[in-house]
Amino acid sequence: MGEYVVFVGQVGNASTIKLINNMLFVANTIALSEAYSLGEKAGINSNICLTLLNEVQVIQSRLILFGGIRLIKV
Image (tube, rainbow, N blue to C red):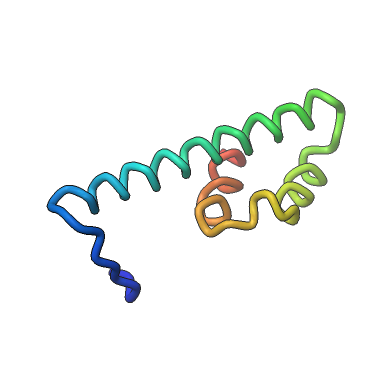
């Protein structure tokens, strides 16, 4: 478990925050996949596309770095 603990109020609020977090992860992963697909369709080498998408500030979040690139490589 994480070391960072925050009291979020009433019973059920933590579950709501978790659902919001999951929603953001999925939305960002879908956007990353679409961007990768667009790059491939435009004729950009897939390795170059992945490398550059991995380096840009837009996806420099722990959520995307954790799973996004790995997911679209599958």
